[in-house]
Image 1: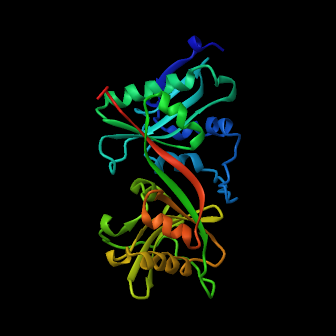
Image 2 (image 1 turned 90 degrees about the horizontal axis):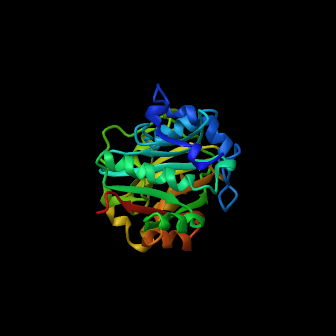
Image 3 (image 1 turned 60 degrees about the vertical axis):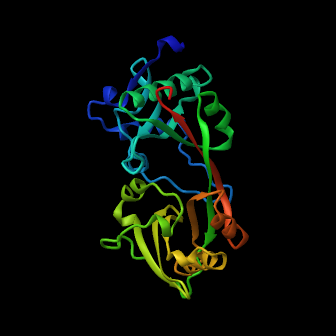
Length: 291
């Protein structure tokens, strides 16, 4: 296969149905049917509909996504969405190529095509979440490190054992960024099947009500967002907020806290307490249109 025999196109042009979930088998081949375990050994098994759920949660748009096609077969992709919660931002949800198509410059070509497509739709920046091993590659493509973040892990401590009420949510709850922990993607929460998510409310002594947006991810619980009264921000109070959260979650259950800014004081406080780093990633950003 030569690079010149490969055609780059958009998902909308390739799939008449514009259903990006049809790329599921290709994704399975690219990643050999496994998800990487976290550094703490927590595996998140794939459901049969994992790729469709991924495209919904990450707001993947066929008109923004790019495919590499060879002999009428898709051999790679750049999945891109434009979440309403991130105005003007094109957000990638995955880049992959089949093993035999790697190290031929196709990854770079797909990425640059995706950048051009996003710019043509008036988007101002492209955002990519990546692991350390790929930082240099993205920097070669004019992406700059914007924020480093951790996924933290601890374990539920509810006594006696508790059952979570999946599918239960707060009605008309007004989100407040001033009292929130974690950097979440709102669409990822909304795109999770209702039977696999809930809004949990518990109380911490001396603080008041604590709300957590939690989803079930295989054997683990994923905490997308935590809100507590602003008075919880001082050092001791922050630790108490998350201790109360763990006391409300099933005993021994792995709890993953996503989107923890590595530079924020609350992240350091939790690491000094009972939380540990499960995974670290960096948000890379590139301005579009040569600005």
